[in-house]
Image (cartoon, rainbow, N blue to C red; front, side):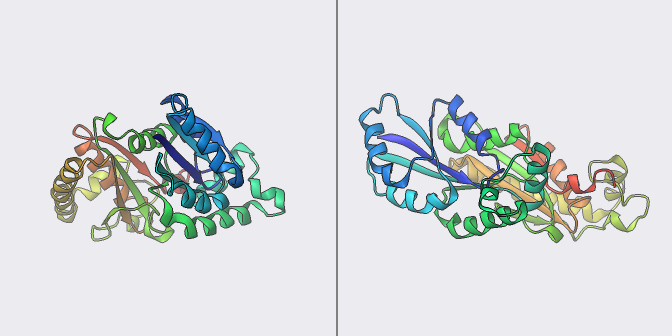
Amino acid sequence: MIDVILLSGASGAGKSTVCHAFEERGFRIVENVPLGALPASIDAMVANSSYYAKVALILTLDQLKDAQAYLRTREDIELTVVILDCGQHELLSRFRLTRHVHPLQSQGLSLEEAILKDKETITHIRPVADLYLDTTGMDVATLREVALANIEGEEISHLVVRFTSFGYKYGVPRDAETIFDCRNVPNPFWVKELRPLTGLDQPIIDWLEKHEETEESYQEMVTYLTYYLAKARKDKRNYVSISLGCSGGQHRSVYFAERLYNHFKNEYKAFVTHREIARYKGK
């Protein structure tokens, strides 16, 4: 029996980062095996299980569905299917900053068209994933930790909790698991001098904490998450995604995500991501 991770996802979503993390944990990285050669390749790995005890197979999105269907018929491997995704806005920024070329651009598609093509494919194949990760707003360190938490099982001593702020106007995070709606709290956007700031700025924090709805909402979130996360840890889960949304993802959701992160970070291995912050920097 060998452990096999089948990894795919949108170009630019972080597959290289995850591959490096897996490799550091002793996984053999095998890329772009033709589907027709997959059975023979797996046979060879199983026959040499001392070397291929842990394998990460990296395949393109169009190969993933057929590959996982075959691999799930094998009784001599333990399979985990991982799909990485990322928001269109951030993918465009990543490609333009790095000047990398999307693989589908070689087929005559524009960058925007190539990204949308990946999105369409992921929509159809997402149900086959054991782990689906939206990497929007994740830095490299967070992505590594989250990916490793989900492949190392009991080797991880702490439940990994990710708090993500977002704006409803830009859509709910694709990997949202538990969502708190922060729009019942007064909105600093309507205060002219506060509008350019974010929930990380002290004037916003001070303004929000003057309103009793803020503390009431926060306490309700803490009460629920105290129960929910303890249950997740008892159930030996490795990763929980908590999303907090407000209208634009600039003020209220950022404030609550930071505050919850600071509350729970000493009990769990916690991270905080602000998906929309980059949209407001410099405005």
